[in-house]
Structure formats: structure tokens, C-alpha cells
Length: 133
Image: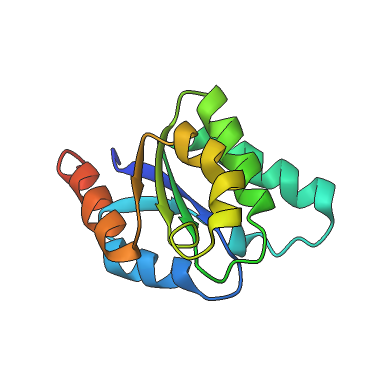
């Protein structure tokens, strides 16, 4: 029986950060990665994304400093909050863009814990694997 936590990876789709996270923790979690669905029609990928947010135990959210909008990520966080999921936000952009930070504040407030860099966020999420079997 597999009791590993299921982690949904919310964030930018171009930099490949998901692959690095999966490689680092491949034996500790089950990852639900939107990059895997290869869908391009908005209603299809939105349905896929929200389905797996619902299935996840933890939502790992990465707002990279060069992410142009974060709109999809915002939807996923809002839905996860409504479902009372554990939301771990890594927000690199707010520290360098005050206009963005003001608009993104609602996402920060909706998250259970917020980190300003990937390294600290990943060190924290690793703690959730302690009880995984």
C-alpha cells in the first residue's frame, strides 16, 4: 500500500522547475504535474488541473520571478483553499515587483506558508515526507 503524500505542482510551465522537484523527491511523494497532460484547449487543461488539485494532499505553488502573470496558479490556489488543501507558496516575484506584490497579496494570504525562494520551500516540503511510507 502506498501512503505517500500527493503533491500538485502549480506554477510556470516553461522553466522545467517541476522536473527538478520531481527528481529531488521522486521516492518521497507522488507528483501530479500539469506539464504531463499535454493539453492545449483551455477548458480541457483547466478541468485536468482542477481535478488533480482536488486529488492532491499538498499544493506546491511556485511563482517564479519571471513568471509573466500567474493567472492559472491563482485559480489553483483559490480552488485549493476552498478545498482546505495544504498550500505551500514559493513567491520570488513579489520581492522584486511591488506592483505585482500588491495584486498577489490575496494568493499569499490564501497559502498556509510562504517562502521567498525555492530552496527554503523545498526544505519545508521535505518535512511532509517524514511520515510517508
